[in-house]
Image (tube, rainbow, N blue to C red):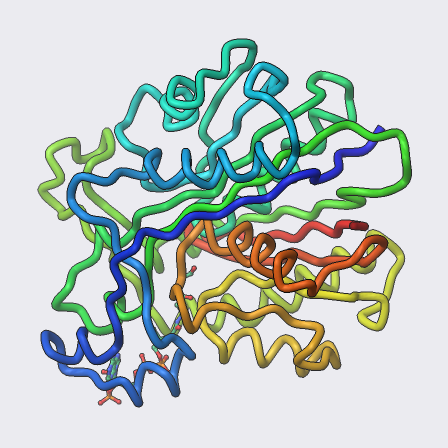
Length: 320
Ligand code: UT7
């Protein structure tokens, strides 16, 4: 038994913040941000919108594309590091909003690596026969946790949600292999310290703190390593990849890996110029857009690969 994606959907909040908008409040420029990251603009939620509000829109589109009714979903996984609240989980809130009755629901926390981790877990649960139809969502609203005076972080992130519906298939297609890894000793390089049980009143702040250079070095190393590893596990080579969908964090990280792997621009999907780094949403949004732009056809080999806080990283290889 394998798990196959039969529907995708994505949702971005309407408010656009451009690099020039940011340059009005912090010492930066459109030119610097484009050159050092590739980002041109990002989407930002308003104060009344939470992660589940984005997730529900993406999920509705994925369900409709999959031609499944809410009753047919038997598990919901929301990958997020910005849940609506500590509990109930955003997955349970989403379940209620979608009117899904016959399902289990839980959140998965692996920050920007969330969707790759979620896809590995969801496909494993389908492969062992525990569930048939799974709604898997990556959704984050990291802009709510930015220090808008820190030019090293506030330029990078945006909000969004992406969703897929997975179903069981007995054909040799869908998610073929998964590879997940964490290096907790580097966790200190990307942290949101306050708000958890160590500091419930968030005396240490509720804003993202990042050692940008350290995360950059890590990202370059592990993005390449995770693609190499997943190809090795699947007994494939870079030449077999039809499309690489990397985590959309920084164009320099993506270009470096594409060059090392000998992948041409046509074989690497990039949309970070429009949305910045949307954390767990970045890969499912990119997957949805790549599909709609006709960049993916039946039988294609797609590699999803990313990294994030933890520090974590991982990859999945899909036969479409
Ligand atoms: O999902 C994981 C999320 N995190 C990431 O993916 C982040 C990975 N890291 C990065 O993408 C990059 O490290 C950044 C984009 C954050 C920074 O780029 P960089 O090329 O590593 O710059 P840097 O930190 O080495 O800074 C170079 C200079 C510094 O000035 P000095 O010390 O040389 O005078 C910074 O203060 O650029 C300055 N700088 C800026 N200047 C204009 C840093 N941020 C900005 C800015 N605008 N926004």
